[in-house]
Length: 183
Image (tube, rainbow, N blue to C red):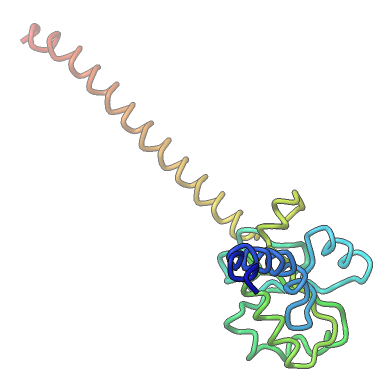
């Protein structure tokens, strides 16, 4: 008993450390949905022909996403769940930016009786850190390129018109003394 009293801090530290070591194992399948690393997700996609569901917002999705991902923002998932009903018994990999929204989406899918739901642990950030490819929204990229090209053309036109104006001024200045001398 005296040993416990004199070493209570050390005992607490040992119990806390043990709990922290077990915490990743407890989080590995929180809520019955397995969390997969990026490498495990690639294997799942390739072997099971898994459907990839991206629950990020529109701008995040357009900036880059996993190839062939279906995009349904988390805010709209509950009302758009019918779009996924045909995939109810298919393997689904859910991702977001860091893994928090996708965990919530997995809960929504499990409550809607989807049977094979997996969460991408760390989200698209972990996917990119693993140096895996993403697809960007080519329409937005094209629009940006078109706008940039139009802006460059406009700048060139302005520069050219200023250049002409400067040349015209130089010619006018050079001709004025000749004209004034002739008068």
